[in-house]
Length: 170
Image (cartoon, rainbow, N blue to C red; front, side, top):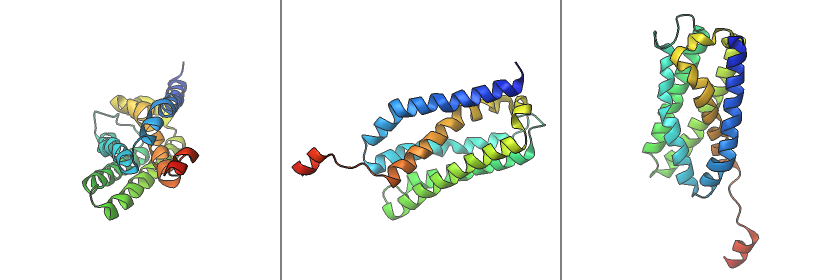
């Protein structure tokens, strides 16, 4: 099987597997929390996005990894990680926390979309071997990040509604 096909199959199944995991485990868990706790859990995961800087690390990735992909991916992840860390540091200062939660989710999701567009434009699947040890990032880590951004935005845009029974009791 050609490397391009392996990469595309791996990436597609990564998104599918994390979608299933998110629907069955992550979404019910997040919905059971208050909104700050749920966003804090998501921010904690995204605070590790500094790891994307490895796309710039010679030896960790191959010398022929397209620079147009590596640079954008590395710094987009880094910016998202820093914003997520700031959100965590300001959790007790809600007028700062919420804008930072919105910022890291929009910057992070935009970064993933831009990276995907760059990967297609630069034919990344054709040189997937150049990802080296970083191969796991777009296959396992990026789909998880994508779905958690979607869930975070879902929690912010459509807050849980009280059931009719609990509304009557209240």
